[in-house]
Structure formats: structure tokens, C-alpha cells
Figure 1: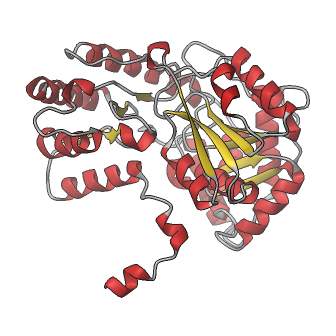
Figure 2: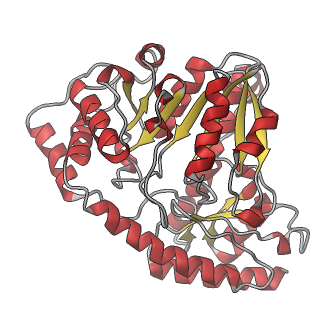
Length: 396
């Protein structure tokens, strides 16, 4: 057993197990044992995939569209991605600048591996989505973290980014609205960051996974600016927008030479995304978009409820999410008390004692927060927040 452990490649030791997936697995294990767990860990919509999308997949099976496709996705789906992005954001991508991937995470992984050399610096705002750090480490790059201000809702500014740009900076990663905080990068600040990066030939990766779920702003893509296509890298996903997490379809919109490099990598790893899922994705992008505002309205209702309940817990503060479907409360009131050394232990104790699954802030680069997904029913939100309130009151 020890010999096998010693045989693991060094590059694997540079990455960690996804904290969000670990929380989901721990919660599922308890549920399998018959334990009543409220799961706030999963970052996926609780809505069903819209029926027209499911029917498109059924038709694909019935028509035997079950063979290999090109490694980088079908021409039909690439055209649909470009057309939807153009309609939503006013961009002008061509199919040759598009790659279809096995989920949005796959797009980010492939982009990072294709562009980051050992020693290259990648600027990442904090709090960050768990995977950014690990994919940069896996590529041999150096993460340069930029702290944001909780008092200002974790809002990112160009002034925060600029001091961290050096001759070694290869890429800046922006996720707006943000997982885990729900923070939104204001359009003016986004444009200033683009001005900084483009002037220095630095790539700006925009993770648009939650781009349709904004509570007080219109959807926007930095890729719509004149000249942006040269250095802006768009990573997108159908998972959240269309409640298609398990279908595993994402995409990248990037310069054609980078598409070629990413396709080369993909051809030796996953090969093509699932053919049936690609047909479903075409229908999602070209078909009715009615489900998106319905989900957004429900997320807004849940956000208001969750933030109100969290702020009612003595000692807990919570910045208001401006997008996505996560709350990121500061629960520092219990850190250092009753044997709770950090949010890792807090999350473990909450699951064991309160039967609520949350993701610890350490996974996102902060040490006094937990992430709560409110992509679940109001009934579950009520039950889980009752338990969290009782747990924190007992231990603070």
C-alpha cells in the first residue's frame, strides 16, 4: 500500500480533492445510512432540465446519434454557442473560435493547461472557485491571490489587480457573478481590468458560468468590447443556465490557435463530449429561453430569505449576493470556540451534529466563511437555516 502511495506522480500531489465534491460525497454517504441531511453544498440547480431539451436528447437516441463526434464538438453545436453568445452579449465569434468541452470546468482546465507554463503567474481574486488554484498548480504555474473587501461585498476593482501584474503574469481569472460570494464585477471596473491586461498582452479569462443569473444588472460579457477577442478567454457552461449539470456540456470562446491547442489536449483525454448531450445542448441554446427568468426569480426569492435568516443569527454577517445562487456568510463568531479551529472543522461539526452540509471557506481562500448553496427548495432552506442558527448559537 505504501509503495503504491509513493508511486503517485508528483504533479498529482500539487492538487487537492474538490472540496465541493467531497462535501457532496460525505452528505450522500450519511443519507445512504438513513440520516436526515440538509445539503447546502451542491452547486447545482434543483430545477429539472426543461422538457424540450430532454426531448431533443431522446430524439438523438432514437435517430442513433450515438457515435463519436469531432473531438472538439459538432459544428452544429459550435454554431449554436456562437449564435447564443452573440444574441445575449453582442459578440461575434465564429465556430473556429469555439471548443465544446465536457462541462465548464473542463474548458477552464484545458485553457489553463494550454496556456500556462511552469513559473507563469496567474492572478486570482479571493474568494475564488476551488478549481482555479488547482488547475494552475497542475500546470506548474504560480497563483497570485488578490484579496477583496468583504465590507464592499467582495467587489473586485482594477486598482486591486494592477499591483499584482508583473512581467511573469500570464493570465487573470475573473468569475462574475462569483462562486462562492455572488459578488458582481461592475462593468466599468471590468473594462478597466481589460484595459490593464490587454495593454500588457495578458490573457483575461472570464468564467461566465453564472452570467445569466444577475439580480440587479443586465447580463454582460467583457468579450463584447472592441478588440477583446485577442486576449479575452471565455469559459462557459450550460450546466447552471439550463439546469443541465449532469449532461456535462461547456464551451470555450477563444482565438483559433488556442482552440487548436485545447483540441489537441482534449483529443488525448476525453475525446468528444457525449453526442446525445450535444444534441440536447443545441436545443437548449436555440430553443425557448423561458426557463431562465423563471429560475432567476426563484433564486432571488431564496436569496432574500437566506440572507435575512443568516443576518438574524447573532454574530453572523453576510454580504448580499448580486448573482449566482450562493451565500457566503462570515461565521467567525464560532471559530476558536468549543474546539472549532477553522471552517474545515466547522463544516465537519455541522454535518456531524447539525446534519447540514456546507462548504468551508478554506476551499475558497478565506478562513471565516462557509458557502451555502440556495439552489434547493424553500422547505430545505428553512430546515437547514434553523439548524445552522441553533448550532452557531450553541457554539458561539
